[in-house]
Image (tube, rainbow, N blue to C red; front, side, top):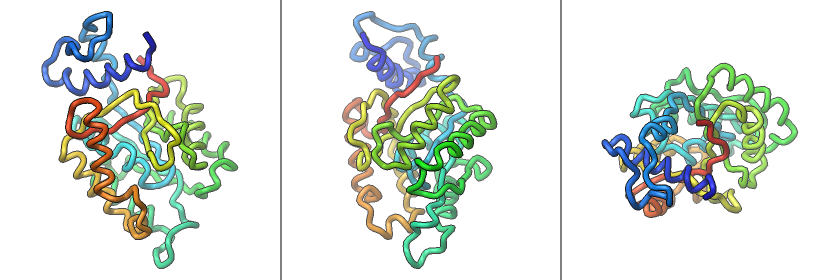
Length: 256
């Protein structure tokens, strides 16, 4: 049996059963080896400090906003790093600090404290030539924040900025941190959805409200900002694990 299906089952179990009083893996989720002891699942779920890496402000919200709201509800400590303010591509008529302000507003709605949010000053669309500096920034974040889990873009993301952040994040966090990639289908050639996070309607609504803060992006009529699309993707991922809404992820590295 390969590791990836096991990881998917573990996440599904801990989210759907562990905190509802379940003490064994439901029959439909069991592998050929039968039930897995509860203490193993507890160890897999013990992520108290979470870091989200958002190449551009809005990527983190799009990729895992509902899950972040859920984790904050559960009392987990969430940090957010936007790697660039995109000052050189702000739409005409908007101040150059627009995305910084929109990011602070959006993350506040998600429930992330302002002190836990940082927007760096790297130049967007030029990340490959800044990869060494980005790696150093991520190394500093690893030491300063000491996260248990890191959300990153997918390695299958074709946007040069997203891909650079994914590669450098794996380098920076590979030794001590669980790393999970969020999906952005408009940029992903493919993604292996080996983990799912069930979310409630209130989590999805908060995610949508946070994304509404990005007027500079919705102004450009980007299809992936459409509320109907975001809801339909959450429904699709929910159908895959027999719940109403979910977000899907790819496990990159799992530290037990």
